[in-house]
Image 1: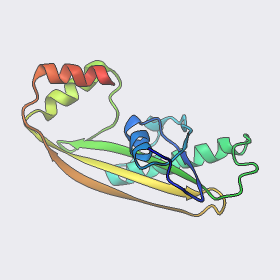
Image 2: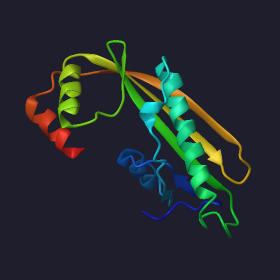
Image 3: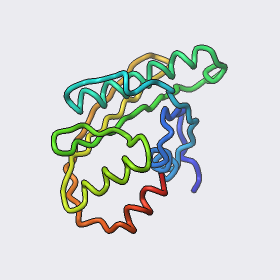
Image 4: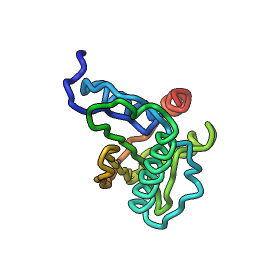
Length: 158
Protein backbone atom coordinates (compact mmCIF):
# COMPACT_ATOMS: atom_id res chain seq x y z
CA UNK A 1 0.00 0.00 0.00
CA UNK A 2 1.33 3.42 -0.91
CA UNK A 3 1.87 5.86 1.90
CA UNK A 4 -0.90 8.39 2.34
CA UNK A 5 0.08 11.87 1.22
CA UNK A 6 0.35 14.05 4.28
CA UNK A 7 1.68 17.44 5.13
CA UNK A 8 2.67 16.31 8.60
CA UNK A 9 4.97 13.83 10.29
CA UNK A 10 3.68 11.25 12.79
CA UNK A 11 5.45 9.88 15.83
CA UNK A 12 3.62 6.95 17.39
CA UNK A 13 4.39 6.89 21.09
CA UNK A 14 3.60 3.21 21.48
CA UNK A 15 5.11 -0.23 21.04
CA UNK A 16 1.63 -1.69 20.46
CA UNK A 17 1.59 -3.85 17.35
CA UNK A 18 -2.15 -3.18 16.98
CA UNK A 19 -1.65 0.59 16.94
CA UNK A 20 1.23 0.26 14.50
CA UNK A 21 -0.88 -1.96 12.24
CA UNK A 22 -3.78 0.53 12.25
CA UNK A 23 -1.58 3.42 11.09
CA UNK A 24 0.24 1.25 8.54
CA UNK A 25 -3.01 -0.12 7.11
CA UNK A 26 -4.27 3.45 6.77
CA UNK A 27 -1.20 4.15 4.65
CA UNK A 28 0.64 6.46 7.04
CA UNK A 29 4.37 6.50 7.49
CA UNK A 30 5.42 7.03 11.10
CA UNK A 31 8.27 6.84 13.54
CA UNK A 32 7.93 4.75 16.69
CA UNK A 33 9.17 6.15 19.97
CA UNK A 34 8.25 4.62 23.33
CA UNK A 35 7.89 6.55 26.55
CA UNK A 36 9.70 4.18 28.91
CA UNK A 37 7.71 5.36 31.93
CA UNK A 38 6.79 3.42 35.06
CA UNK A 39 3.09 3.01 34.34
CA UNK A 40 2.49 1.34 37.71
CA UNK A 41 3.54 4.56 39.47
CA UNK A 42 0.52 6.36 38.00
CA UNK A 43 -2.67 5.37 39.82
CA UNK A 44 -6.23 6.62 39.44
CA UNK A 45 -9.47 5.16 40.80
CA UNK A 46 -11.50 5.58 37.61
CA UNK A 47 -10.30 3.69 34.51
CA UNK A 48 -11.02 6.66 32.21
CA UNK A 49 -8.86 8.89 34.44
CA UNK A 50 -6.09 6.27 34.46
CA UNK A 51 -5.89 5.79 30.67
CA UNK A 52 -6.01 9.56 30.15
CA UNK A 53 -3.24 10.17 32.72
CA UNK A 54 -1.08 7.42 31.21
CA UNK A 55 -1.45 8.77 27.64
CA UNK A 56 -0.54 12.25 28.93
CA UNK A 57 2.47 10.94 30.90
CA UNK A 58 3.71 9.09 27.82
CA UNK A 59 3.43 12.28 25.74
CA UNK A 60 5.31 14.32 28.34
CA UNK A 61 8.09 11.72 28.57
CA UNK A 62 8.49 11.47 24.80
CA UNK A 63 8.49 15.26 24.36
CA UNK A 64 11.24 15.50 26.99
CA UNK A 65 13.29 12.87 25.11
CA UNK A 66 12.73 14.66 21.79
CA UNK A 67 14.34 17.81 23.18
CA UNK A 68 17.62 15.86 23.31
CA UNK A 69 17.45 14.47 19.75
CA UNK A 70 17.64 15.75 16.19
CA UNK A 71 14.31 14.19 15.16
CA UNK A 72 12.45 17.51 15.02
CA UNK A 73 15.29 19.56 13.54
CA UNK A 74 14.87 20.60 9.91
CA UNK A 75 11.29 19.34 9.81
CA UNK A 76 9.33 21.81 7.71
CA UNK A 77 5.90 20.30 8.39
CA UNK A 78 3.95 19.89 11.63
CA UNK A 79 4.76 16.81 13.70
CA UNK A 80 2.01 14.94 15.50
CA UNK A 81 2.73 12.73 18.50
CA UNK A 82 0.12 10.04 19.15
CA UNK A 83 0.06 8.38 22.58
CA UNK A 84 -2.55 6.03 23.98
CA UNK A 85 -3.42 3.58 26.72
CA UNK A 86 -5.96 0.82 27.28
CA UNK A 87 -7.14 -1.08 30.34
CA UNK A 88 -9.75 -3.73 31.00
CA UNK A 89 -12.25 -3.47 33.84
CA UNK A 90 -13.26 -6.92 35.03
CA UNK A 91 -15.62 -7.39 37.96
CA UNK A 92 -14.92 -3.82 39.08
CA UNK A 93 -11.12 -4.19 39.00
CA UNK A 94 -8.86 -2.32 36.60
CA UNK A 95 -6.54 -4.70 34.76
CA UNK A 96 -3.53 -3.44 32.89
CA UNK A 97 -1.14 -5.37 30.68
CA UNK A 98 -0.45 -8.78 32.29
CA UNK A 99 2.96 -9.06 33.96
CA UNK A 100 3.67 -12.58 32.72
CA UNK A 101 2.20 -15.58 30.86
CA UNK A 102 0.54 -17.01 33.98
CA UNK A 103 -1.28 -13.76 34.65
CA UNK A 104 -2.27 -13.47 30.98
CA UNK A 105 -3.67 -17.01 31.08
CA UNK A 106 -5.58 -16.22 34.31
CA UNK A 107 -7.05 -13.05 32.80
CA UNK A 108 -8.23 -14.78 29.63
CA UNK A 109 -9.69 -17.75 31.50
CA UNK A 110 -11.64 -15.31 33.67
CA UNK A 111 -13.14 -13.65 30.59
CA UNK A 112 -14.30 -16.99 29.16
CA UNK A 113 -18.09 -16.99 29.02
CA UNK A 114 -18.21 -13.60 30.73
CA UNK A 115 -17.77 -9.95 29.94
CA UNK A 116 -15.47 -7.02 30.65
CA UNK A 117 -15.21 -3.34 29.76
CA UNK A 118 -12.32 -2.06 27.66
CA UNK A 119 -11.40 1.57 28.30
CA UNK A 120 -8.96 3.31 25.99
CA UNK A 121 -7.61 6.81 25.48
CA UNK A 122 -5.76 8.58 22.69
CA UNK A 123 -3.89 11.87 22.90
CA UNK A 124 -2.65 13.69 19.78
CA UNK A 125 -0.11 16.45 20.39
CA UNK A 126 1.12 18.91 17.77
CA UNK A 127 4.79 19.12 18.67
CA UNK A 128 5.23 22.39 16.77
CA UNK A 129 2.47 24.32 18.55
CA UNK A 130 2.19 22.30 21.77
CA UNK A 131 -1.57 21.98 21.30
CA UNK A 132 -3.07 18.63 22.20
CA UNK A 133 -6.45 16.95 22.06
CA UNK A 134 -7.46 13.66 23.51
CA UNK A 135 -10.33 11.58 24.71
CA UNK A 136 -11.36 8.21 26.02
CA UNK A 137 -13.94 5.61 25.06
CA UNK A 138 -15.34 2.49 26.70
CA UNK A 139 -16.83 -0.65 25.21
CA UNK A 140 -18.40 -3.68 26.86
CA UNK A 141 -17.03 -6.95 25.46
CA UNK A 142 -18.89 -10.26 25.82
CA UNK A 143 -17.00 -13.53 25.44
CA UNK A 144 -18.07 -17.01 24.42
CA UNK A 145 -16.36 -19.84 26.28
CA UNK A 146 -12.68 -19.72 25.34
CA UNK A 147 -11.08 -23.16 24.82
CA UNK A 148 -7.72 -23.83 26.48
CA UNK A 149 -6.05 -24.25 23.06
CA UNK A 150 -7.15 -20.73 22.10
CA UNK A 151 -5.93 -19.35 25.44
CA UNK A 152 -2.56 -21.06 24.88
CA UNK A 153 -2.22 -19.56 21.39
CA UNK A 154 -3.20 -16.08 22.62
CA UNK A 155 -0.66 -16.21 25.45
CA UNK A 156 2.11 -17.33 23.05
CA UNK A 157 1.42 -14.43 20.66
CA UNK A 158 2.30 -11.88 23.31
